[in-house]
Image 1: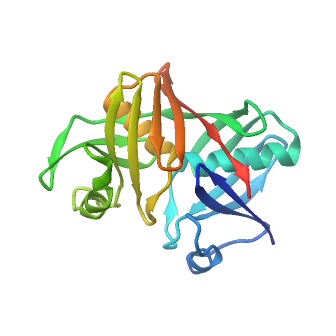
Image 2: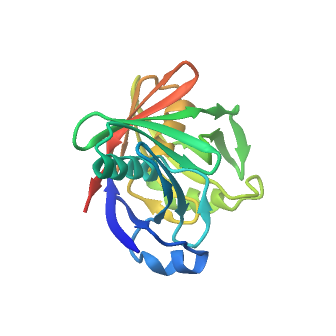
Length: 228
């Protein structure tokens, strides 16, 4: 088994090659990180991965996780454009420089605002579920705990509390399903931009900013990934 530690704006993952993980192994393999990226298979310009949360659950998608996997694959093979597969989903990525990666996260679904537990929420799907609340980002822990396991979300949900700072800018904090609060989240940046109508948009998290644009019905995300 080979492993390396990576981060994307402070979102830290252990990337593991050559091992078949179980939920129990994933829970104990990466203390202090935001999850494990298990490399299942690779080709010259593609990789298939599983994304494990710290609680041993599998994530359907992670913008930061797939960006890390794309950077790892590019460094391993020299390819400048790669594809990362997570289950039935595929994320195309191209290297912009030694740190920045642009990803095509595909189609995004946004539902009308609704009241959930007395809070106005916009549900968004970016291959994984999100609940976006417009308000004070300092409320993330209270609202994250309230909404993550609410019956409206039978498979639980990721939660973002976002403040609109301008026509193309927002500040947000994230509560990730199965993780808790994290320093940043790629799919959360897309969810916030979609819910607030930012196109293009820059979403600032405690760990740094991610850029989002929507084109042809698809979401594109640009941000860094680095080996620690």
